[in-house]
Length: 89
Image (cartoon, rainbow, N blue to C red; front, side):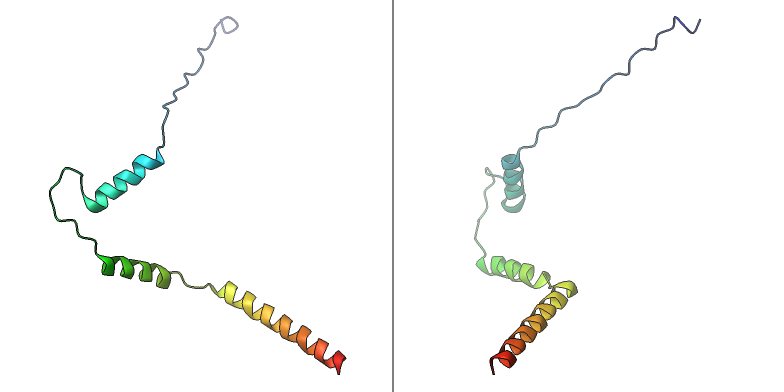
């Protein structure tokens, strides 16, 4: 009989996760420089670090919309400046 059958409730399956930003940063450093117990010559390569920074700066280009926005601002400022100079004379 359908009136007396009860459906079992759906089971809730929750697997908690924990995010630790410090642990993630340490793992990235280990991947970059190696484990703490390893024996190797760790030499800081300043030239490589400078080149990486330079590549980051070169890689970030100004978008076309920003150039158009800056051009519009310059045109509006020139227009206002010319109107002020014209009224002043």
